[in-house]
Image (cartoon, helix red, strand yellow):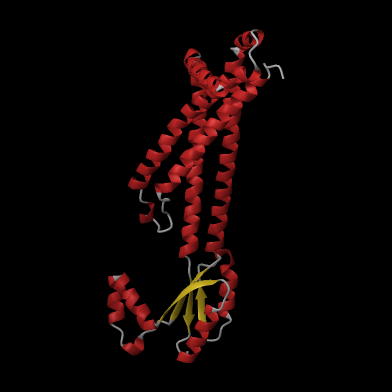
Length: 299
């Protein structure tokens, strides 16, 4: 019961303190809001860069061209060797007739050209389209396939894939580092703002000590006040994340530029980020207050 009375009194005193010291409380809330907004933007960017990287890894294929004089048995042998490679996830085999039909559907120009061919004039080749498990090892897989008998050509966008993945990794690491740095900046700013608030109320703490209040009785209202400030400061970033990102997702269609440029689906992504922002705001507020008031207490 004593603990509940202490908690209830601390909550009441914390509420009063927020409004009694409104200008300093507003400064603390603003610090949390601004830094958490930047944290939210960085997290959104980081997640979407990772999403683009995943789409690229899923979509890239090795295209293998079979020599036109390969027999059915030789093609079957090629298929068995491809199937048994460690890095091969899946593959699709198409005859040159099937390839021609696919091209006809993709463009009226191709359709007109292909329909002018006789069956014997088809210059295309039978192909294997191969998806790999690990895109970073795609070069070694392509080299292994090239060594197979009756393979005329292997293509997967050599050089471009490696450079693109390298750039995306650098951007992703930079954004993760930025998020961590911003969390530290948030802790620093909020802690210092709360220190100013508590410094202005040091006489209040000294009076409480003189009348015999325990350290817990003195500290608890300040800790709960820090929790309130962190909670209030995180509300705007949370709302901006949920409604702002949802609006961005609905109105911006980057996939029209490239199939790889797709924004991550809002749910549950935005709610996870919102929870992280809420935890950062409240925990930083609580521990910032606890650390700041400790120096004025008898330990």
